Length: 432
Image (cartoon, rainbow, N blue to C red; front, side, top):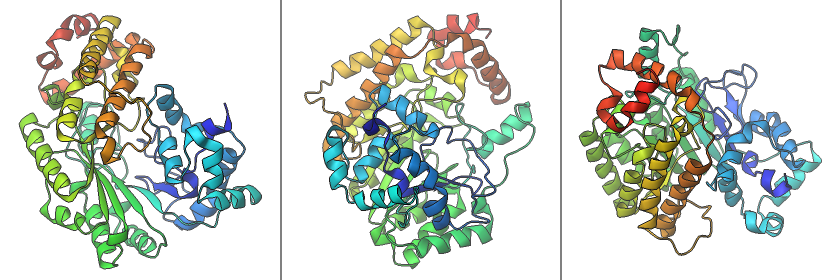
């Protein structure tokens, strides 16, 4: 693989703190939804600047050597199916365009930082300007594709029905001492530009509002962009008002379908309430000129109606974005669908795409550019069309899917056949 296909600028300005308080070099790192505990590189015993400048040196050196870092596999899969990857987005932040790679790398404002790292075994003198902050798993939803590490409600349910024996440990930001320590590091940072928060549900996680207020009190808000995602089940006037004080807001709204299957996949949500909150956030976002995305996690249960999401986005002028193609749980991957159902999903999506033709097919890397929203929507839709066409057949996992769904349904008192009656033959054959 060539250097331009493996190099990523992200480790020169970005890092992450995960649910356990451990530091990581990337928000898109493979299996990023799982809580990993690293006792050596943790907020309890290491300053973030030390991890960034020194502990991340091996990753930077691997990239400078032209090697593909093992944890970068999800970006490679996304690019394979013509979906814009985190690597490509981070390159753009450094002024590097893949189609003019050598020329733009040479003119990148980070060129001297790359050269310094090349001479010092991957070390850097730069500071973090771009954070992903995992606030923990405090969440009021229990989406079928989620994990206990990302949803406290799902964790409690998994323990009740015997899928796990112990609950995940509390998040680092539940410890007031650690939260204050992190806030202290943030407000003393130089060149802080972007903070992206995930949960759990950010709006009900106390640490989220506390960090926002600390940045406002430190008079840093006007220079910082805040990114976060909400599951469209709650609204907070106080947080909405706080967000108005920041330079920009990247608002993500999690939803899988604007059909009833959304209630099953994002249980215990109710579609009418979801739609009301979606419209409310979109109205505020348009008023404030925020950058907005519908955040999707397509599975074998929702892929057949994904066009409803693209249609809403098209009509309201907002982007559609999924972090990656679903890897875990494996039995919810799109490839679990039998061929005939994948063909149906392909045809549904293709029909929608064909009714919204795109003239310019140049790949859009800046997927949050408000001037190319419709082209971005079609680009994302085409990535799933390509994925449906080439995804490996994993229908052998169908029995595992049914076993899992039946365990949830025994507790939730619902049935997948209520929402997907057209898949009854498939589900029955797999043991439903």
